Every structure is written in structure tokens, then in C-alpha cells.
Image (cartoon, rainbow, N blue to C red):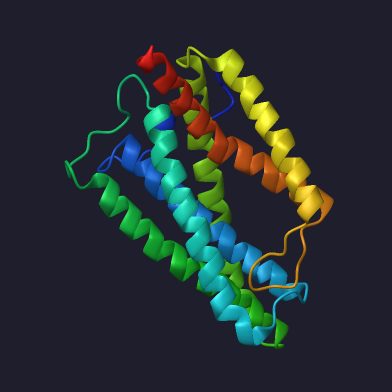
Length: 229
């Protein structure tokens, strides 16, 4: 994997100066995960997969789940993929990550519910719902783009300094195959909905699980093996 990317903005331009790299990664991924949960809820509603009576419960569940996973993943990825020199000087030593996590989680919950209610109002024939949704959509998409760009930098940094990247890549690939086989065999249903994962959706979920969940565990596992020798 190349360690130079000239087509993306510099990482320091995307880091919140008052918080620094680690807290920014935690916060932006928590916000992006919650935004993804809100977008998923709105999409399920528009396609008739969620009953309006269960909308808020589904929105709260998916937004909380997405934001929680994003928060943990952002913190781990921020640590593993930290630059050689931090891209921002923190003005809140010791509190940066908790502050960023709390702020981002709160914003993610508001955004997730906002998107869901806007979709419900639009389906009910209220034009104001679509107008409100148009204001929320750029924020959600922007948070996803922000987290993706910083996450890509972090992955490149982590991969470049990972001494076991070759064997680790094989293990991650094997994990993806196992997860894909499990999803295709079980075809689980998304909680709170009657939506069963399709084959393409199963492939996406297996890939995300292998990359965002299994990969950090494999990294730390191989690291512990080296230390125990």
C-alpha cells in the first residue's frame, strides 16, 4: 500500500486544532457512525422496511450502535495510525478524547433522529420534511467523507509501520471469507426490522467487520505474540 496520496487534502487540514489527531479521529468516526445509522433508518422507512410507530426506536438503536462502533473504531484507528508528529496541539490535555466522544455522540443522536423525522414528514406529504432533510443530508454525507479521508490516512500510517503486514493481510483476508460464509449461511435479520441481509449486503457487512473490527484485533494479537517471545 502506498504511503503517499497526492489526491487527498493534507490530514492536518482536517484535524480540529483544539483537540488534535486522536480526539478528532474519535469524534469524527463517532459522528459518521451515527450519521450512517440515521441514513440507514431513513432509507429503511422510505422503502417500507420500518413501521412509522417503531421509527424513533429504530433510529435510536441504529444511531447509538453506529456511533458507538464508530467511536471505538476511531479511537483504535487513531492510535494505530497516528502520524509521527501529532497534526494538532491539544488545548485540553487529558480531556480531549472524552470531550470529543461526548460532543460527537450527542450530535450524532440529534442528526440521526433529525434525518428519520424528516423522512417520516416527507412520506406524510409535508414538503417541510424534505426541506429539513436537505439541510441534514449534507451534514451526514460530509461527516462520512471527513471520517473516510482521515481513516484512509490512518490506515496508510498504520500499515506502513506494521512489521507483520504481510501475514496480517492474509489473516484479515481469511477472516473476511469466514465472515462472508457465515452471513450468507445465516442471513441474519436487522434488529427492529423485517429486513434480511441480501447477498450484496452480507458481503458489505462482512468486509466492514473484517476491516474495522477484525483488523485491529489481529494487529494487537500479533503484537502480543511478539512481546511474549
